[in-house]
Image 1: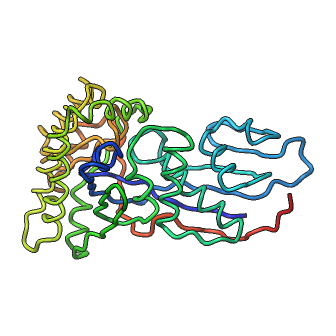
Image 2: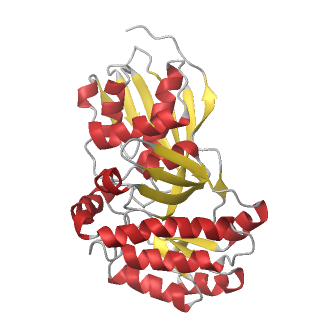
Image 3: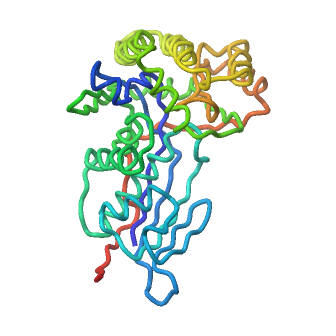
Length: 331
């Protein structure tokens, strides 16, 4: 039996520049962190006395006798890709899926990590990231960027750069005190509704050629935000102002990224003292992150009392194995 623990991520800057259609020609860059909310994947070989050969448990339970019968595309294609057979797979998570936190990629990375471990194989963080990208974008044919798989594999607060032939992960090196202050000045709220990011991603992909100026500016903000964090003596509130800037750029890329309800939530947050913020992930719902000084946070919680507030802490470990007991298996 193998149990993996993989964090979710929050992407602050550069989202959209991690789409292959963009970074293959112009290069992409994102600034993101993982935090202490996780998905857990448990994998073991299913004993051979059931009348089915594979069981997959997530929001539903699938029991099948052929891999091709598995409805969950990532599970089906990952089992084929790594030649896995007769498995019992279960998924649990701290936060809901389809909410802009990279949950599907966290599951893909955690599952692949577990599959390799079950075979007694070691897979480093970059291997897991690239295999998860291949699984989701090629084998499953899902539109979207490639930052999530890298972020949750590596963990930590990073600038991730993309080009046609490479992926580079650069940790943001700041003092513990400054990092803690940033963490304390960020507030996470659940809007109450989820969405399928692949639909928004498909629209954003179509809009890429018409939004090159906005995407170039969003990419530039990655460097500016990293400088705010790493330069001694800078005012952290500038991080919040840059969040506001990138949100205004992002919401103009396609109409599906925001709506009247989300705009009203954002307006209430700013009125309550938030310097800036953004929807996490592709948009359309999920979670808002806001930068707001601690003395104003009570007012923000009161203004958004109908939304669920989620306290969190940054984390640094990425996907890891909690329990390791590989098994011999004969086909």
